[in-house]
Length: 213
Image (cartoon, rainbow, N blue to C red):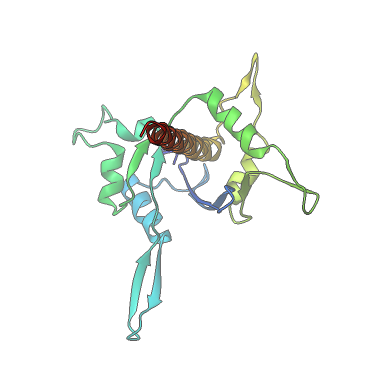
């Protein structure tokens, strides 16, 4: 999520397939020309987008909320604004609106953001079908991301980052999510390798012990 009030905000929803493809399947934002939306109302609206009615086994209509693991938010969301005498952070206002998804701080490195996009958008060849695909894919319903992403430019004199732009909110929010997923996946891979190494060493020690019995 890239927070905003005077500037547009952008909420991005991801899901991960079994083969590791990241899908951007929903967005919530506003245009520069639209009426500004308070943070608490943003939280309320985002929560409503995740809540769907269903009919239970007794024929009663109930509501079910998507199970979202975490909301990766820009660092400003965790800070108190000097003009806000209440002492609340932006997250407090999202909570006030009923947004219940746990928050975590985004890694905001601009260099890492661009390199992560490159990693997830590079073509991978499927040998079975001889077609190319990318590890990051976008639903057609995410029109703001599609429309703004293609117009972003490199920063002059620094091709390692994307230049600041009034329409980079979707890029920032989606970048936060991709970096979080990539980092989390890497940590799990390292942990799994350590566990596997420990198991192999334990087996070796057990075999050596047997030889001396």
